[in-house]
Length: 164
Image (cartoon, rainbow, N blue to C red; front, side, top):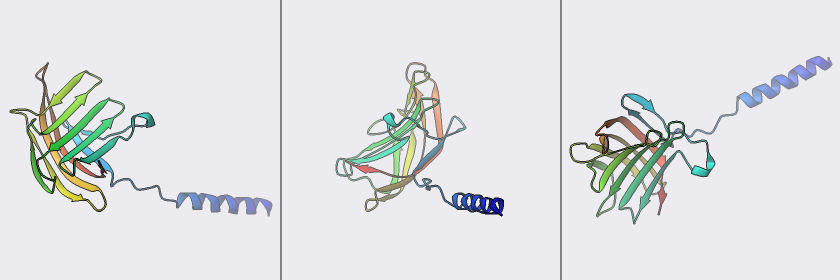
């Protein structure tokens, strides 16, 4: 009888813990492909902050998004610097005030959009009441010292941003 009670208690505990749901953070993600391979941000070191961050700055005229992958030390960054508020729409990432970068710190390479190497950032949703942004992006960037290129495709994000 004692074993039956212990078994029942163990079974109850297992069922209770297995039915608990993990916090769904799928709405705070960024995904893309770098040169055809799936790329996801990841950072387990709390001193460096989050693996993905987004900011709406200067009364909404600047949008900045940054994603970091700890293992490879790679970063994908997108930024818009406008004369008006950032809103839903498609923006050309040409290396001027609208730019994209792929940094491969492990190899000491910095790829940047520029003349002849451009892309797009499409903001599908920018909800200022909930501070959430959703969009898609892709770009081709050139590394200045080696003339190598990086192809960032099938990029998507849905995350919360911080206002500054």
